[in-house]
Image (cartoon, rainbow, N blue to C red; front, side):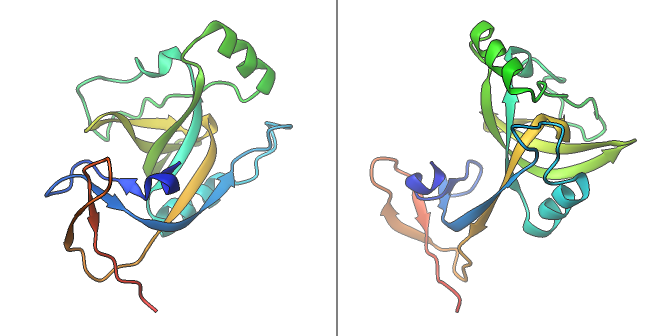
Length: 177
């Protein structure tokens, strides 16, 4: 989906929304769908991905209570009340989809992590508004991390051309050899 749109759309950049093109991405499944208890990427590996490769796109399965979770209007890093997610059992999720219209996969930007006692938590920026909200989410809630590889650039000048139909600016990129 992101590749079809031409890149990752920023929201707070000046002079306007920018498209950050990327060359590829790698997906990491966090658990095996047939055996949800079997982890494919452990907590330390997930932390290493975020530390070494910057923000990741993380996918989790949410239900109605997700949007009302957390402290609205507050954005402090001290609030470690983490959203725990929906059980990873595929049958449970199928049943939940029948009862809850908002139950579905949801993608967020994960940009930080923390170990709180024995729980690994990821800090995310959600897309409900231009400012988030930002939330802490228990790593067990996620089932996939995707690491985008942005095209490396030297010049961050703005092109005069606007992308067709969207009106967003595109950055001038110079590929490094």
